Image (cartoon, rainbow over all chains, first blue to last red; front, side):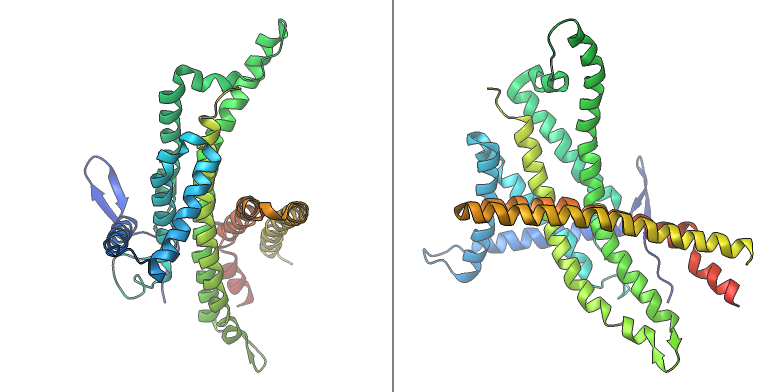
Length: 253
Length: 92
């Protein structure tokens, strides 16, 4: 068994260089899956009677929509679709790693969110999207909070020089931490499975007890843990994006 | 004890220290978040869904740190130094 964690199939593309083929193929697969799922959900509204599947789905969508509009405020209504789409897309991206496509010899498989490129792309999308929305709403005043604790007197200007860079760093740390949190949570889930597989493959025996066979029970619990973590991190990513957007577009009072 | 074995022992201790420290800190944080959430629900039971949302947000943020620590530790353990193969070489 020769299996490596963090090793990717690469393609050479013009202009961008080498790209991770399995990540891109799996993301396309997830796009197809989610398009098919939403198309199917939308098509199933034929009569006025709501069936069980629609009620479950509407519960999740309603929850996210209420959360978005109550956090951002009265103008938060128009951001609801992007956050619902973000939650379901990241959720399916996290859970697609459960299916052993790669182990069955296909070129795709594994969670695309276990690749730092995917999560950094998401975080940059959120970061620049928030800048765009804030600037369009408030103009150049959107960056006024970078100089925020304005102190009276001549010391105020000096304080600005010290506090301004701190505010900038705080602002720039958000997408970095957003990307790293999602990446590490999903990546460590795969890494733990790999560690357990290594223990099983090494066939450790202590007297009559085979420790490797005992370790073979762990992946059952680990998959439940991975499912929980994937759901929680998709939710946390969405909720943090909502909170950052609400902070950036909050009205002064 | 050879110096190689000493270095390997230090690697193992370092890995355990990383995991222990991040688990210690985030366990305290988790406990604080959970106890405050229970207090808030006891005081205002009608705000339970709202409190639950932010409880999960806090737990989700906190849970990231032990996971990041474990990931970095396993990376040091397996990828940078490859402690298990060295230990096997020493035992043989």
